Image 1 (cartoon, rainbow, N blue to C red):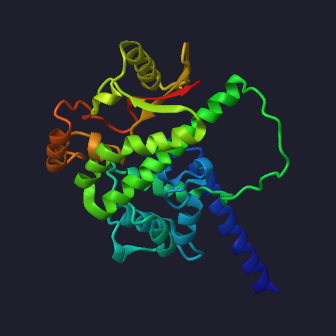
Image 2 (cartoon, rainbow, N blue to C red):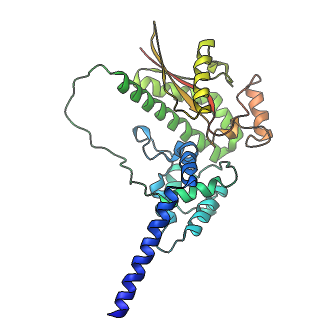
Length: 308
């Protein structure tokens, strides 16, 4: 009886200790920093709620499942995640099913200690199992005019769907043929893929920038003003609200394009994340290129969705 009581007390002690450790982390500055990193650097591909089911990488729930068990310490978990991010190679795979479905993750560049912050966030957070398929009602519903809030949410879903399709194709190209050949893919295929999503939803989708690579994406003087508004918002750590402009062709709705780790392989600083040979290829295809020298979580331009 005494042995059983001691066992129960020890279990309760370690359980309470783990709980208090987690609570302390969730109230820490590291948690706040990691949450922003996850949103800007990880959810581009590992989004728990991808638009229209267009998942391009496994969700955090699945990643945590494969890297954590009852015997795994926090240190082991962080080291395991860090090793994979720094060495995404076939011989280091822990999730063969995910690799078969999505391909091997491209190597993404991180600043010092960022991987540890991200891994610790995953370790302490409880991610919900994503519902990949939702039941659809068989009843026909009458179409109603969209109010502004619903319209903005619809446009956000179109943009997310386009981002997912572009990222999925880009990552696949990088994994198979490297970053240099992926630039040619962007040069030839990106506009066609974007148009395919736009046609499905009977809208027009464009990407515009004040520092453009392809002249097709050059922002007008008025649109440069919208991009400046988005830059000011992120500079002042405020949420960027969409900009809605009415004209004779319908409505143009603008959303900011923010950089993440994957972007920097082609839009970062030359000699850093953007390799010299990659930049040489960019200059061959785009002699007047200006879309470089970006860092993480900066405004690279805007999505422009036109609803007629």
